[in-house]
Length: 86
Image (cartoon, rainbow, N blue to C red; front, side, top):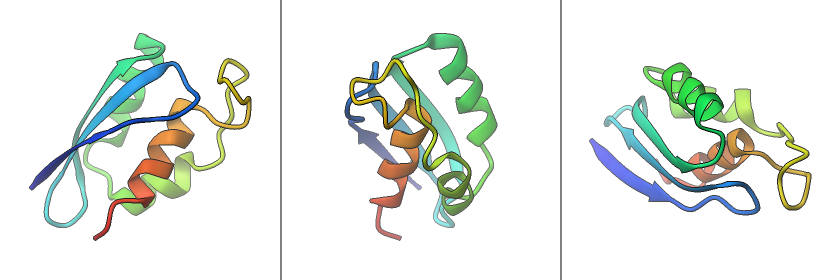
């Protein structure tokens, strides 16, 4: 099991803390900052799913509230998860 602190870019959330088991299944996700209700919902939905499944589901989602308008908190989660080596 490993817990990682991830720093998203160009979005409202400031930190994502993800816990993965040895098979890259997400055990927990905590998000600091951002839209509380939406990110709490995303946190519940990703639990128990494989890292690669979450990457494919969330990659490319955009939020008009992001600084660059070409990313979002879910997209940043996908990007950060894809940078974790297996």
